[in-house]
Length: 186
Image 1 (spheres, rainbow, N blue to C red):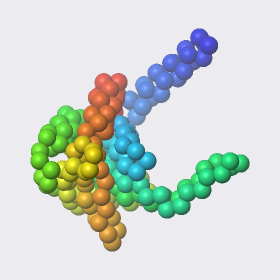
Image 2: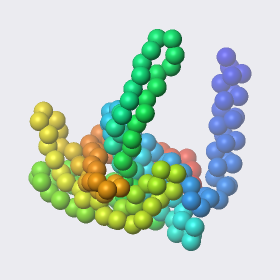
Image 3: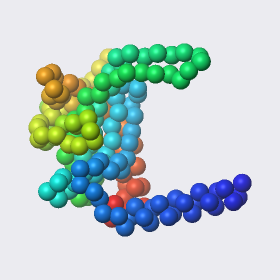
Image 4: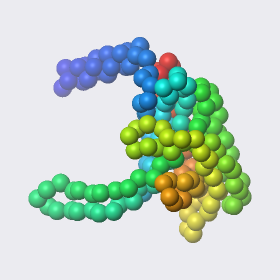
């Protein structure tokens, strides 16, 4: 058992060192932190470099619709889902991204109905970022739930929405902070 743990530790260190020295490729999302509110809402922080070299941190907020789900005992579960995702620009540096998470936490202290607009981009479905747009964020309080942020954005020909609660924001911030400590250049 000791040998297995040492092997995994060495592999983790080697991968971390390799990842730190590697240049971030253009057109590819590099996940930094992830949180899941439930099966319906997911969020993540990632870095992205455009083809022109522009680099930034983004908050991906998504809403998953289960279109078809099959559960059987003799085969693995299958599902067909549709994902609407907006990608909120957090900043070009880790410090700006940390400040953005603080802005989201402060926004939760506002009264329900408070509205803020954030610059965003839409996901193209191929892990690339689409055109620039605007996501509207509204502080909401749902029946028997705490306040949350509800992001409204255009997805195709319709308006989609995705929620983000306080615990998810704190989880993303903590994961982002730990990742940044482990990989300050990544």
